[in-house]
Length: 168
Image 1 (cartoon, rainbow, N blue to C red):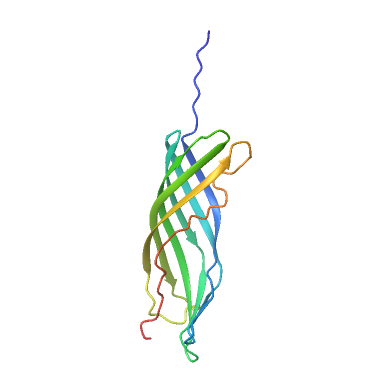
Image 2: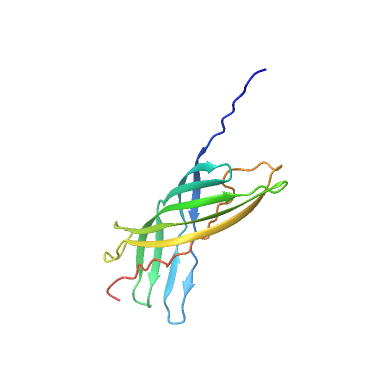
């Protein structure tokens, strides 16, 4: 008779690519806001507290996003920005036959930082920190091969950054 002991990994580290794609907005009084896509990286760390619950921490940064703000026909402002995300969440998973649904809820901060270089045409923009939260749920089938974070879109709710120049 032999005694065996198995140890599962209680930690998970992942590195993902991200894309920040903002919509074009135009109001009835000639204010136009457009942005270029920004690409970045997201690092995640998950620690399993029990086999069905975990805590997760994320840090992400985009390299460069160019926002074009045009309040009227004579003024044009280009603002280059870098966006950072730091978030924490609690993850609870359930087992029901062949399904592994989970719920994730947490909060964090988005930091919008203007890059003051030759691409930014106004210098009176300031860094903004926006607090927010997210909740997401997912249902995974056990027999299908899957990645640890498939299609991670966490519906992060926050107040949008106001890079509105102070002179307007």
